[in-house]
Image 1 (cartoon, helix red, strand yellow):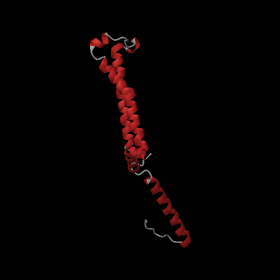
Image 2 (cartoon, rainbow, N blue to C red):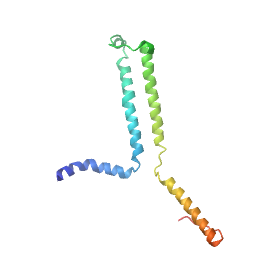
Image 3 (spheres, rainbow, N blue to C red):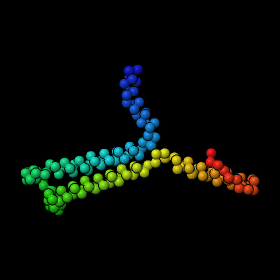
Image 4 (cartoon, one colour):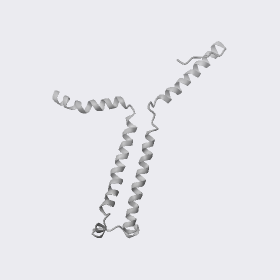
Length: 138
């Protein structure tokens, strides 16, 4: 039992430190996952198809040819290039969305609450004393 706990420590301790360092790890994890999934589902197969059938001999000996409505091999390459480009552009957009994640997500909420408290305290001071009191930030 004690050996199993010791064997798990090298895995658990780094994850624990990551959880402490990155309290907003959810958006980072989602972004990395979306980048890797779209890369492995769309980009790798399209590039592999283009590389495999790049030589003319490979296209001549192909078991299945691209459909004629697609435009043959030129149409197939065009679709593959479009898919790779579109996925790359959408992934860049997702990466830049990550840069808008605030380092302290509750900071805006704290600032708003601080302003609300200040206004409430000022309005109470005016009602009680009948004069405006200048407050200092705590």
